[in-house]
Image (cartoon, rainbow, N blue to C red; front, top):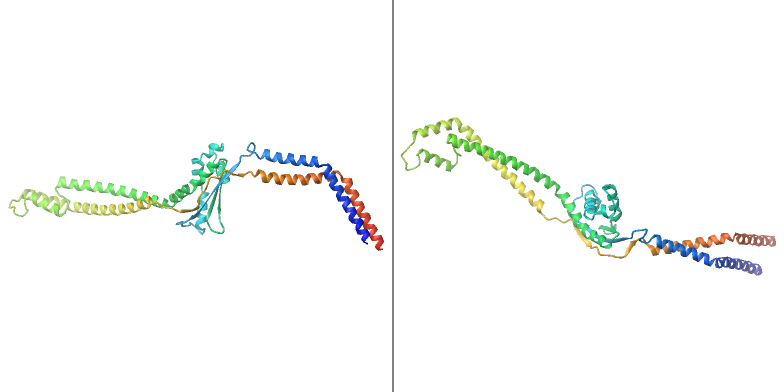
Length: 338
């Protein structure tokens, strides 16, 4: 039994050594193929064929964000990052159309934006991570540095949009009230000039007394003027009174609108911040794409395995002999046991 095991072992060792001899005989071919494949990877993944990409990363937390639906503030901010406003802002400011040779095609600009700017949510800490890729490391850093400020401006404009709409409506109302006040004021002036009926205030009463000579200490009374004013008051008094009341109402309404306008204007001029930066971007000159060394190692290893298998298959007669010997041994074992 021991003798048979020794023979089996020797057989396998002899056959394995033959495999190794075959591979050794083809060592130059195998080495050449592996070398060519590695060189091909290095050449075709060089900047001549593939533009390298550099990355700059920043991270921030959103705050003071009121979500518009059921999403979290972080997800709301991520939607702003992918919004058309943000795409337009980044692609126009950093001349994506010129740098990537895209002519008036928003779809391609948007695709280039999403390819170069990756926004993701940290599942453990809840912060938003923005990865900016570019063929120029300085540009990647500049865009990453500018990204939160551009995003904050877009959020501010979106949050303040209702204030702008309200301010516009109030401003239109103010103009209408001012126009109405001017119209009523001209009417009151015409009543004073044409009918000598002035605004019924204490000052107006004193002016009327002086005009008629009925003020204290005066015994002179202009009966003709008094009769004329009496007639004017009888005929136009109600109209003047109504115009005066309308004037006071319009002034009060104008003052209320002015107060609303000032309050809205304060909200619009108020400085707002919605992003808290926790990780500032930095200039990184190491390439993140393509991974030439890693790819070359993987391709070289796979090529080595493939070349070895190929040359062993070429020597298929050796494999056949090996199988026949194994089958013969199995038959001998079975006959001896029988």
